[in-house]
Image 1 (cartoon, rainbow, N blue to C red):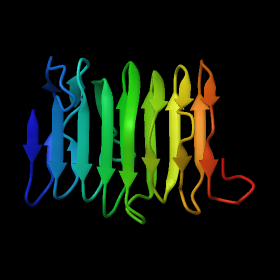
Image 2: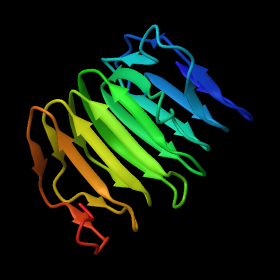
Image 3: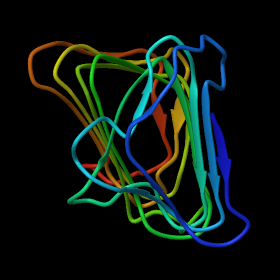
Length: 170
């Protein structure tokens, strides 16, 4: 499934595929990507990958995009935050948020593995299971804060680097 806009936003609900491709669902918005209702997951690609690219945000703080997917690649380039809620294991292959683009990045999942991250904003990763940060991952949130939470599992850090020197940066 490939959706793209030259201008405007993408509103989504119930996109589902059984494809096992690395880009089973690929959304590229010249505006933002929003939830268009709460009946179903916004994205379901449990066998394949999901790529979300937007200029003005992905989801809203009070209306996160819901999904079940294998690997996820997220890009936001100009403004607003990234708000996702995943069922099952969330494998984040990359988050790339241009400096100043996001006020917050909030990701919720049953279990989460973060492999790549570049942003200059606050980061909240909340998992109901294990939360794993890949070895040697450099998370740069500028003057923002990194919050890692696991409600019923472990937070597994290995080689995490932050450039924020504040005492409460992580």
